[in-house]
Image (cartoon, rainbow, N blue to C red):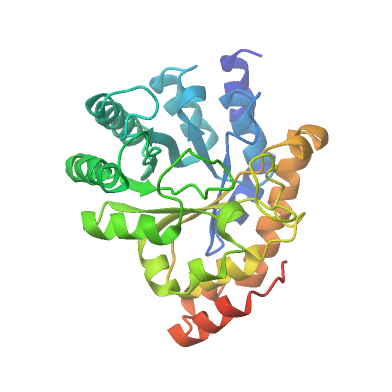
Length: 320
């Protein structure tokens, strides 16, 4: 269908207004990822976001390039769907074939896009080591973020640095732990530079959540997908609740430590392809509702740091 047809559908969907309002009136902020619905175009994605009670979406830059920004803004406004984050920019070590300055310039372009879409978070990857020493790779990322932070601040956009755990994508990033990413963020020391956590990669790493107060203080975005067994490169991202990760426990720890950012639901893989996008979004919606019921007051009831540390060490596996 043409975008104008989808615009008409979005405009004429009052029956879905209650569902969208229900999701946004909880104390938790949820968004669905365009990577989950890779073959759908934005107008279709917005229709189904509304249908399943979501009022936020995370956008992927390659898919966004299929539309003009003016058209994308118009569709989002008609649907009443906000943009939770934009993905991604970075690669400052030259590992993708671009020079340092080309990567910085591309990130400036992404910041501008985020500002135009009224998106407050841009996900940033550092890049892989790419033949550099680790100390030099780290210096490149620091210099890039020092240069970009004032640009992001002027645009009202946060840069969320996202580490890549080694077993998930070997060689795709030299920042492989949450602690390493936090060290870079704290070295930059700018309020517009924070952290993006992928629970699919890190939820079963108890050590990563040992200092949850520090983690929550810097985190802007938490991506949620499930898995079964040890992390490896060929593992799919299951819809949350269909694997064995302690997702709800990690989320509760972050909320009680003060996290107030966005939860991005982004399952991808064979299960999503088999079940279909509609069924996956419905499952995401049920999970979000169950999570809101369980954790709705967690963001207003902080636990002592010692209690959070004990929960991290226990490695509980309960899920809604």
